[in-house]
Every structure is written in C-alpha cells, then in structure tokens.
Image (cartoon, rainbow over all chains, first blue to last red; front, side, top):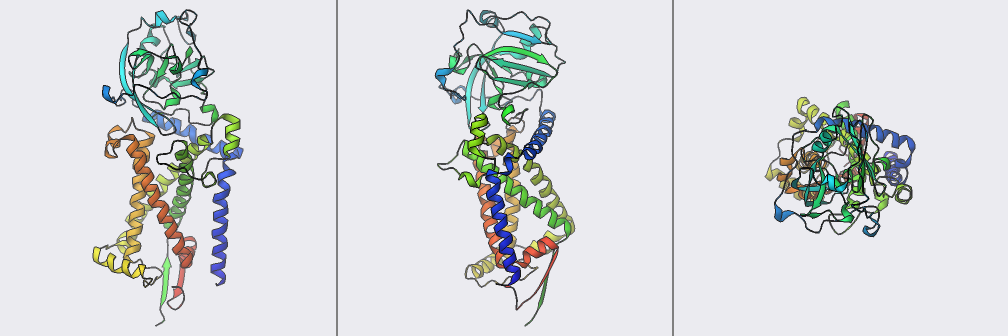
Length: 234
Length: 218
C-alpha cells in the first residue's frame, strides 16, 4: 500500500465517521437549526409564490373515498375533546368587524358544499375522504373579516393551534368541514368542525376549532413550533 | 510499453461534482429518516444511518422522531442539488466534455467492455472512460433528473398535479423516488469502491490534475 493510498483510506474513514456523526450530532446544534430555519422561511416565500389562488386540488370519485377515515393525532382517540352543541361557541378575534360568537346551530345555517379530496400527511401517507361544509371565504365575508389581512389563525379545544395565509383561506376548496362521509363530523375527527384545506399538508387542517382570528402577524403552528415548515402547501 | 496518462478536471466540474456529492449524502440520510416515518415497504432504515438529530431527544422535547429536522435538511439540500446538477449539466454540455468523453455509447461496445469488466480484464486508463463507465455516468445523471421530477411531485402534488399521473399517482411517485434513490446509492457504492482502487481519480477530481504511467496504477 503506497502512502497516497493510505492517506485516502484515512480520508475515507473520516468521511464515514462524519456520516455516522451526522446521524446523532450535527442536526441538534443550534447554529444548524437556525440555518435550516432560515432556509425553511425562504421555502415559505417560494411556496407562497407558487400557490395558485384558483388552482383546484384534484377531486376524486365517490368510490375512491375512504369511509373509515384514519384517526391521527399525538394523543389517542379516547382523549379527543367532547364538545357539546349547547355549550360550544366559536370565538372570533383580530381584524373582524362582527365578533359575536357563533353557535353550532348558526354555523350549520352557512351554505355548504361537498368535496372528495385527498389528505396528504407530512409523513407520506395519503387518504381520500368526502367532506361537507362551508367555504371559509363565505364565513370570513359574513363576519366582516378584513380580507386584506395576511393571515387567518385557529385555536383548538385540544390545545392545537394553526394558521394559514389569506390566499389559502380564500381558496374555494378551503372548508369549515361539518361532515365526513355524509355524516356529522365524529368527535375524534374534530366535532363540531375541522378545517379542510386540500392545498395544505394534513397537519395544517386543525380539528375542534374554537377560535378564529384574522391578523397581519404570522400565526404560530403546533408542528411548526416543533420544526416543521410553516407554509406546508402542496 | 510505458505510456503517460493524464486526467484533468476543470474547476467548474470539480466544484459542481462535490456540491452534488454533499447534497446527495444529505438527501439520502434525511430521506431515510422521512421514509421511516411512514415506510413504503416492510422495513425501515437503521437510525444511525439517517440524518435528523437524536431521535430520543426529539421525542422527549416535542413528540417528534426528528422528522422535522430531516425534512428541513431535505428541503434545504434539494436546492443545492438542483443548482449544482443544473450547473454540472450546462457546463459539461457547453464545454463539450459530454460529447468528447461520454459518447458514443453503443450496445456492442458496452457488451465488450462489460464482459471484460466482470472478468476483471478491463484496464483503467486515467482520463479515459470505457463504455461501462459512460453508461453508469449517464445512468446516475438520469437518475438525479428522475429524483428531482418525482421529488417535486411529492412536494407539490396539487400545484403540479398532472405530473403525478406519469408516476402512477402520489404513492407511485413515492415508489419512483425510492427506486431511483436506490439506483443512486448503488452507483455511489461502486463509484467509491473504484475510486479506492484507482485513487488518482480522487486526486484529479479534487486538485484538478493527476498523471500516471501505464505500469503504475491500474
């Protein structure tokens, strides 16, 4: 083995060691996390530019819709909050003219549509479901929300919180979903309603929504606070 | 017969080669961590081989097995790969490197070199690419293009919707992404093994020039 070859093996070994280290080390450095967060914010801007306000998510046939839709949360379905229709109030806050809280009964008077769209999880799985509910844009107009504001935020009964950009909030397929598979939204899926946003990843579809607010400051997000990309458009 | 062989790589080729190498290592490591969150096939990748930080720590801190960090790595390195790949392709098209050194590629000459290679009778000549090498390089460059296409389909399945139909749907695009990742990983294993056998190619790709006489390196 000549000297050059030996040097190369040494180089090869340290490359291997570096790869091994990256698995448990480099990612957790604050400076690395800051750099990755900066790229993630750049990706937010790219995605906002790519977003087509009128481009519809693909829709599917009735036969393709899954009846027993997958339950997904960081807690088990038995711990899902049970909201009673008599006590529930949807609180409104921020840049909204009429902040009177809404009851379930009043929410159900909103004009409703159905959509058969695909839920795509950030983990990679996907599932087609049939959703029924009111377009968020109709609701925002009804309550006199400032539609020139940048964001709409959501707070939820299970401690979850999310927020989306105004163009997505006004997208025709962004629904306040009261129904799943033609039936009243089950408790585990977010009764009385969940946001159904087929142009976003699954985690940006909050359930058990109890507050909607309109703001110019980017709302925080439960999984975004844990390092996921904020815009998460698909 | 003694014969001097020279291999040179211009700075543009070297820089884009190493940037692509770095981007691909990061993308494969983080991609394996993302794969583990929702495996397509009946296996997962060992945690030590994946990129995304300490799993136990991430679970304890915020209930996430380091997939957030892995995705952040993946969506950072994708820009590096796209830019360096584009730079590499444009440079080598314009400079004539592809035309001069990687063509022609024919079935008969491929078969001749391939059968010589598997019987270990194919000499490595520094600065010259045999037909098996040429095909391997075209293959890995095409695989990167497929990764970029299937990757954008998985990232933006609504905004690029018709594209996923080419891959047989969203889950089909994930399988295509996996298959070409495997092809690139196999290429890397063979590529690195051959570089260890002929270390002067490493010198040329790093410093720009290497020479050998035919009686020396094989």
